[in-house]
Length: 122
Image 1: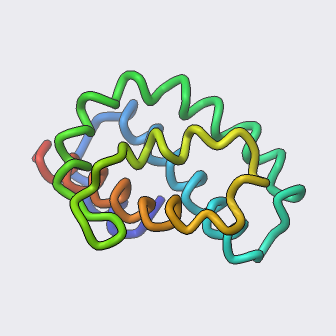
Image 2: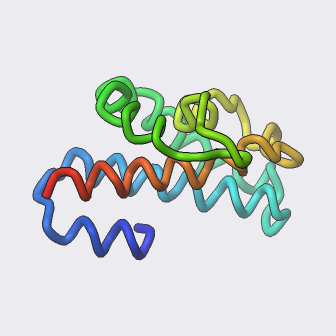
């Protein structure tokens, strides 16, 4: 789990949200690794096949809850207009990640939304 999110989560007992965050961390890590060419898209396939479908299935539960939080974030130097979670979950394979600067610009907005949600629960 992201260190700051983990720090914030220590006061929460919401195991369902914790599971969502753990999978989101995996998506985030894989996206960054593929984008920075630390691993190839082909090498990322098995992790992608496990993480993305799970998150796609679960995100519907959290979408409306997280929307007010991501709308308060910025991406590409402006208020976030696109759901950063949906933007990344729409990827059909890791081969779509290299060169996708827009996706990289929206990763921090998603992380910030998660952290703000956790803070609001305390």
